[in-house]
Image (cartoon, rainbow, N blue to C red; front, side):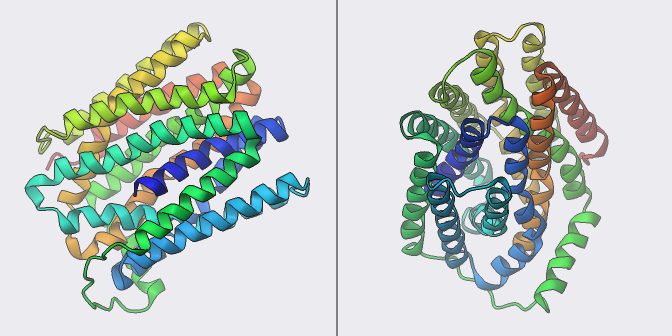
Length: 377
């Protein structure tokens, strides 16, 4: 899990840095980030059905291998000066098709192997997998890109994916009950309908996805601010995101020790509002100190947001629907991020201040959605 997530974090930053370095276009960076995620999100109901039906290990390995080959292809073509923009976007989009297999596959293992009373702690470990990867991934990506350019970053991420595939291939799998849900496409559609009719999963789909619009814009805006306004380096960008990850690790570890049952909604709303408030100083002045402040506060809110959200989704999902429901729910939750990244590229190219305003607006809209739609019980 950790190897795969570190590699994914590296890719998300390397791709932006490579495009800014090679093509000098924030808009293209946003579009590439959008395409690196969205096709996979679209086919995620099918991925969830396959996970429920065939188990997780082999499908996780498949995704890691596809990611490795796609990154090596991008690096080779870029070094040969044979990577026009349409081909870049095509490769990025195709390799995204399998990523739900690992993201959903790993996440649905936790409720299968951990007793219900320990779900907060298990989800803290799971969430800290993201926190640790957000420390190691951006720091490694920034350092490698600074030393070996974007192509070196792609190769480094590919090697980490390869290591993840080797480790996962030797790991035990959770026994899968041989339950047929009918044809794959029908079973996948049933998962979509189930989430649409489920009050909690439907509310999370709206509230979390709107919040991720802000996150998607931020991941484009911060590198543009640092590189183009503050004239910093790729290494500095990686270090800033890594610092956010360190704070997130501590926050998640602490919240994982607390029972959030019955209070998940308020934890999540408070986290979103704090994140919005942290961006406000940047609207007054684009200074490095305010960038650091915004990212550190976002790190603090990670525990307040992630652990209650993951645990709430587990508590209110029938175990028989874990693969299908989680695949659809997680994709709907995350869809805002690639859309936000595409918006962030356009907004940052026009006005960084406008991009920051959009972050605040979408954060406030997310808080309002969670308050209005998320059932209390």
